[in-house]
Length: 275
Image (cartoon, rainbow, N blue to C red; front, side, top):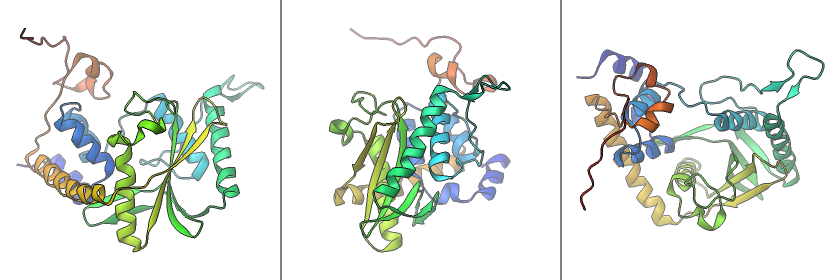
């Protein structure tokens, strides 16, 4: 049976189960690989809770807000951290000053590169898929999607979140976004759509890199099937209220749900190794 809470949330936002975002697909993949807790998925995608607010995420939200004017998913206005507040010396902290400079540089680059912004923060949908675009634009006469990233991992090839170009095509968790958005946009607008990552360094406002992503048509066909599978799995999880916890001492210690979570790990797990 579906609990009353889940029914209420589904009625409040029916799109949760009928449209699949690339972030939900990535979360489901991690869940079935036992790398993500089911209670996190339930909180984020059924109960619609804003869970993760790491410093890196807050900086990224502030950067995108200044660069595009678009609010984050939950509508809160990103607030910059300041130093010497309430005194004549009040100013942005160093990290937020860099984010502000990068956002201003982003605006300059878009102007200098002849990019015509058509919309920011637009949500697009097709069949079972949905996505929210940072920037939809015309560039050199072609419809283009520009996704902004603000990261300290531009040269990192080992981290799954690293943007080093020579290894980027091996990182499905990053590249799925380009496949997902191109598929939706080309089906919706019935014309070719270019996809770009605009990468801004969180450590150096002058360090900006642009990656144009050419997607193999076979990857798009596979992605369409993956969307259908993700929808089926997600609906089954919601209908049966089957969200398995994946407790671990390390993850639970930093989990935003740990304070009231009955499944949290309080002791390390004992793993048996056969030799």
